[in-house]
Length: 485
Image 1 (cartoon, rainbow, N blue to C red):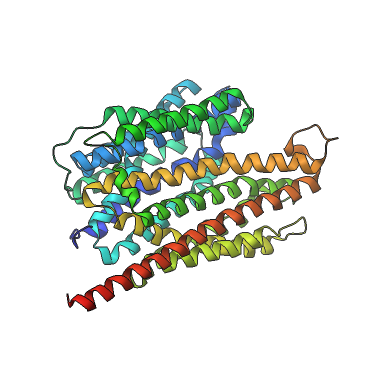
Image 2: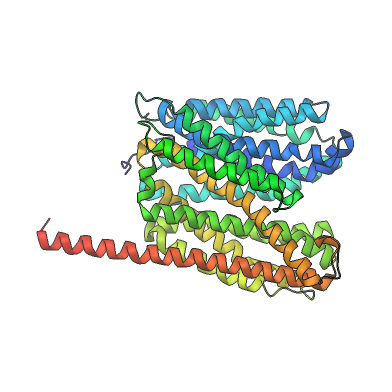
């Protein structure tokens, strides 16, 4: 467990880290809206231009855990500062790109910096704040994630309307430069794990495993999950993962200390966090098609009503974090999952008569539930990590979020497409997106029902953890009273 220490400049540390988190988050969402413009201006096929997004995602996910481990070994501040510098330089280079190949390459450079920012930001905040304020602090970082998600498409749309696409990258430069100086000035040096060797073999096995998984999920969306190539990539993922675990059990200084997972409550926190992101990302994929293709709303109206989730989440997350410092993390995590279950049950009943008001009222509990759940859950994960493992646990936390989002998009998209074709009947031979309206609507309701089941499982796990924690505290109290200690 961590000592009750904090940085005297903790709020300035928070400002520096929040700047990085905001930039890394906004950059993921601001580029998506520019893909049609990039396709036209760079004269590239969509199959090529989508790698502007995919190359960034693959680089971030595959590097995060290794960077987290390096941060524990050599210090988090140097790596975070270097990451900020690389991200800012990469942003400028992306803005200067003259063709698709250059842009994709510079996005990889930018993603290397983003991986350092995303892997170590939570660990730096955890070290800067005392345990009794950890929930509030992590709630604020959750707010920055929400703000990045909300403002990305909006700022991107405004920039594309007034300037060229190059400026969606140049806009990062002023904040990036300010953030770099704030990190150098205010973030204190962290304790390191001492002289240890970096596990290059384990890092390589983990890199191959995560890359194979992400490629399988990506190609599964386009080529179908019955493709031999996709199955081969899944097999490579599983075999590389098994090899990674085998290596970690035999390495003196592993990338991931597998003994962390002997704490069942730590594992439950990671699993439930992963499941919530699978569900939320899947619905973020489906809802624009529901609002625009099925209900006929404009992109502007669709964007406004969909903002109810990140807005309510951004408001709730800091409050939930502060309350978890007083009441404990588990009760609020359970309450958040219960609220999510209520919200997704309401969403499963949306139909072709849905109004914007009904849509927002249905999704409001989803945003509130995510805000209630995430901050306490993240606080519990970081609070259970030994100080010398904060970097890798922070990377693990970011990894579960990113993998959950990626998996959710692929899995829920595949479920919806399959159910649409089933509901359309054997006579229909087209794609899911062009199937009869009634078939698509029923498929959406059935897909959200799958989400309801997943959240119910997450809620059950969290309730079990709550009961286990109460029993453990009761047993400890009885022991102390009996022994007089």
